[in-house]
Length: 415
Image (cartoon, rainbow, N blue to C red; front, top):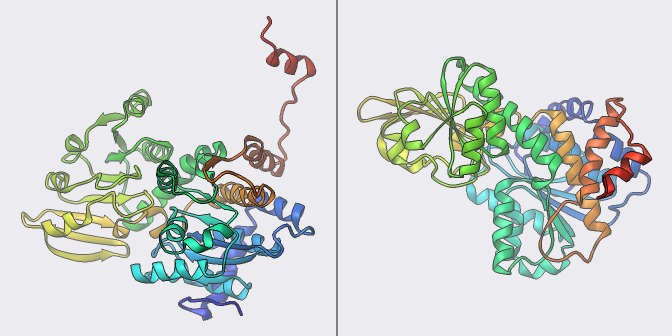
């Protein structure tokens, strides 16, 4: 058995069933697995990952192992780890360090554990592995060929490291790939946030005033799905271009100060901190629901809620109710952590099939290009495009083929 630190090894049978269900709906990963299954491109390569450890992620990790890699994985969020999936992965020969509900200190220890395997490639979610290497383990940085990052928050951190001149190995910005933000961030986040909200609260959205903070690709997806379920959507934005886009999409646009006393449900998706602060909480109506779809639990000012409350209780699984001095109650979902994973199963399987295929192909690209500069790099366009092509192929859809005349026309400046 591989080295591991998990909660319940006996839960492995349940984990295997979850993984099998996900694998059946992941044709793109299956096609890549079939293409490289005999050549074992990762033979002798250690890959360390910090990801949400649930069934869809397990499919990626298993493919990496099947293609020859030695895989060590840590959970990227205490509430997104599924203990049965972790147990199944260990039985598959993957070193796993995580459990649902782990403390902050355990989380850091688990990150250290996967880095002690001496990885050549990183797959990160939030840039915590990269930050750990630079802050605590600089001696292993020279052995890392590079890695990939799949979150907006992580890309922001990596770009800050690059700007300061401290980034020591290349990182592919999977989050910025067209196939990632178009499908994963918009359709995946939109549906999975609704899943987390609805299964947690059992509330009706139709007719409610639904406030979305942030109108990037994730915020657009959330707003679209909320509107589709009958909610009246208000968008809070700091960027004038995105605010104008939201307005032209038919959304109401306000500041958080204006939206706070009106909203029934608030979802943050900005990648920033304290988007909902004390002055906003003081204005919210009784029964307001607060949820976060960003990577870290800093977008809603949780210390401010705690300071304003006189009583708190767990009302339902993943709902903590804070009663304020004037009797108003505010409901915080999933401890302010990303609600689509902490209170649900994350993005739909078919969406993560695309995103994890992009992660896998990015790891192969890093392996095949060992001299990339130590910068945050865009995923090559042909690699990005290949993921959508594989998905189209799996669906049996035929695309139009440009004629020679059409290609020449598009390439020429002459009429």
